[in-house]
Image (cartoon, rainbow, N blue to C red; front, side):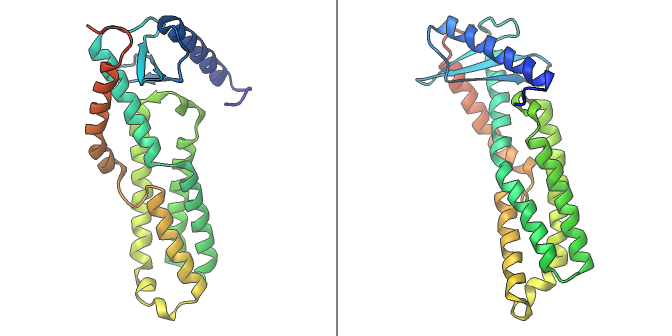
Length: 225
């Protein structure tokens, strides 16, 4: 967080107050805490403790006792964490840099350069979302934005794959530096989470999120209704 952003300062105060409330309720210091905003517009704070154990606080910093709400908050938090894991910022940045290097090696192929530039622009938009300070809040609404941005990057990368296919089919005729740059770029795409649709991968992760939410509820430090 930067000290000059009012939103970030306000969130930092909220999280500090939530951590203090969680510590007072649990009698021990939390290992971490995160603000959560599911689709219904509520705000919760989920504190994690050694054990593992958890405590969900509502907007008034009162321990949540409604099991359904605790599960909803935990599921939302885990969903956002899944998105974050599938879109690692360091890998997105490396993929963007690999694209720039490949353009320099591509000998001015207009179709290839156009596809690379479109993919690069989409990756920068996705990276901006990933590194936005407001990502500190686990917002389910923001997941829809991530899915849309990633799909744009996925489609652009698909166009790159299509136009680069003739090059790949005649690798033996290409300069070694270009072959290496092509390989590095395609490997980077996989690590950056661009070679597959995020929506499909999240569908596979939903069961784990629901299971994890049940585990959070089972380890909740305050009895749930």
